[in-house]
Amino acid sequence: GQQVMQIPQYQHVQEGEDFTTYCNSSTTLSNIQWYKQRPGGHPVFLIQLVKSGEVKKQKRLTFQFGEAKKNSSLHITATQTTDVGTYFCAGDQAGTALIFGKGTTLSVSS
Amino acid sequence: ETGVTQTPRHLVMGMTNKKSLKCEQHLGHNAMYWYKQSAKKPLELMFVYSLEERVENNSVPSRFSPECPNSSHLFLHLHTLQPEDSALYLCASSQTLPVRGPQPQHFGDGTRLSIL
Image (tube, rainbow over all chains, first blue to last red; front, side):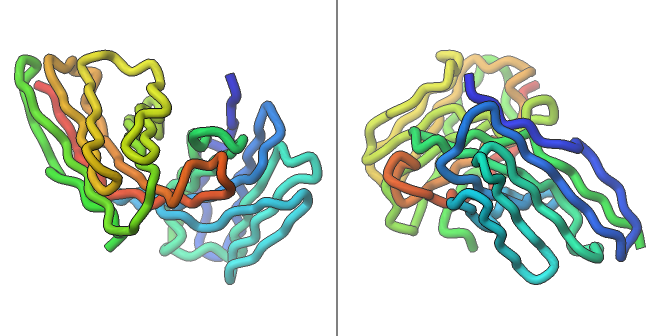
């Protein structure tokens, strides 16, 4: 079946360093979504990308959707302690449900 | 406040008990979902409902029984669970199913379930 792979599984950075998580799908996606889950919390929708090659920014966060619509990345510039959490990508084949990656857990030390 | 409310927040039960998890969404959405989140397999989709009709059952054991009486409420009935069923159970909703276009999902806070 369709899979969405996400790497790395864990990432630790010093505050101020950059961070990137990558998402790859075995099949072409109609769109991709990103969620953040804080420790002890629930996933919260961040953004969705629909167009091939699309790039969107939210303050220090930059989201990209690949040209082939099979991969995506989330890049955080100058991480802060408030960025701590698990970041999930979720692929959508325009079916009945999203396919979530296993997430990348980010820890930040000050 | 996410617009999706789950109760209870925590539940401890024995393997022979019967309990129910409740989810209520106040967003006017037509699609609702149950997910299981554990350390080993984050965010496993369990069930999908659209307009109170089940559209997906992701190979979930029969000891989990969903119920969707209307588009605002979703239940997960539990009976004779196993220790490996201990996990965070998350409910989510979206305006419609993804087949009708990109749909962000709104999650509740979840029910932390522990099976003794």
